[in-house]
Structure formats: C-alpha cells, structure tokens
Length: 261
Image (cartoon, rainbow, N blue to C red; front, side):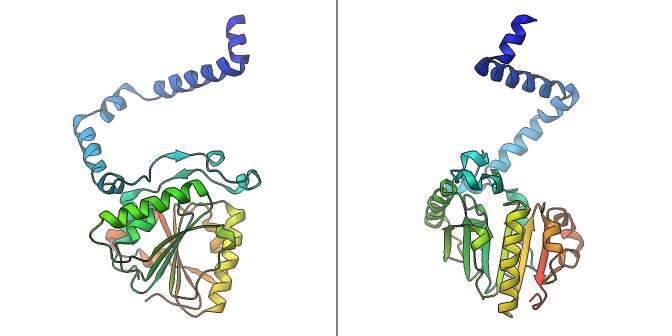
C-alpha cells in the first residue's frame, strides 16, 4: 500500500497511474455483449465505408481531431471563453444543407467559430453569394486557409467560389447588411454569445435584409431565445416529417424585422 501511495503522489508516475486506472475502468463498463455488438463485421464495414464519404478522405483536407482550449494558441486571458475544437457531425451538416427550404440563393453565410473550415467547404457547394468564416484561433485559421485552397483545386462542383476565412473575434464582428445566414456549431460560451447577440440585434435594427441564425448543438439557446429581435422558428422550419429528426440538433431563428424567403 505504501508503494502504491508513493506512485500516486509522484508527479510523473501518478499521472501514468491515473490514465491506466481510468482506461481500465472505462473498458470494464462496456459489457461483453456490447463489445461484440460494436465489433460485428457489418458494423465495421459500415463504419469503414462511411469514412470514404468524408470531405477529408475525398479531398485530402484536415478537419478532424479534438483540440483542447489550451492547445488552440489563444492568449491566456481569453482561455476562459474558449471551447475545445471538435468538428460537427458531417452527415447531419450535409443533410441540413440539402434542405429545400434553406434559403441559400443570394445569401451571405457567416460561420462563427469556423475552425478548420468544414462548414465553409460544404457551403461552397451551394449557391451562397459569399461565405465567411470567423475563427479566433490562429492555429485553426491557418489550417482552414490551407484546406480551402486544396478543396477549391480538387472539388468540381463548387457553386460559390467567394470563400474567406478571417482571423478574428466573433464578439467583435459586424455582420454585413446583406441577406445573411449566421451559422454556429457550439463555438463559445454564454459570455461571448451575449456579445454576438448584441451585434446580431444591431444588424437587424440597421438593415431590413433577411437574417437567419442556424445554431447546431445549441447549448446557449436560451441566450438567443431571450432576444426581442429574434423569433425562434425551429418547429415551423422542420415541420416536414422527414426533416424532424434534424430538429434535435439544429435551432433556427429569424430577425423579427424580416421573414424567410
């Protein structure tokens, strides 16, 4: 017991011990039946086949990975508002962008917290007038720029070539007066979201052009619901039966001074 205690108190061996301990009990929690279910040949083949449809596989770009806030290269004083990087569910994103009632024609798409540019690249295959990504991490921004260049050179069905990734703070971004769709995939916490909301409200009051907010995996949904300038239209937007499964993952608002096309 004394040796075990010394190992746990050691700065290096204590950390190794904790990792092994956590992994061991994580594996124990998976039942044998579930383990065999996960390792069925059919499931493995389906997973492998789905990988061949990803944008990374098709175009040699890099949108994967999990990057913790402290590894994003942002200033220490801004870490409290930073969230980890993890790309959104690609299949859900594609399904959403394929919706017939999503008004892309003539709209500017602004992706707040655009990361490595996954949304920007998929959106480029739609008839947006312009696509803008705002990313706070220089590390992710540089990867995004490289991805966009590679994607444009290899993709044959690009509908919008005006794609721009901007290194900047979403809380300080002034939205354009054009008809706009603002996309977010859980990019930041409530504090930054309140600043972003102020900028949305300023844009709504300044311009009569339509404004739509699309929030995927909407953890700060309550912040937007409290705004008198935004109307939650999620249920109406997903009213068609075959699209209702997406309602769990996406919330939609429109500026109260404008209506959907």
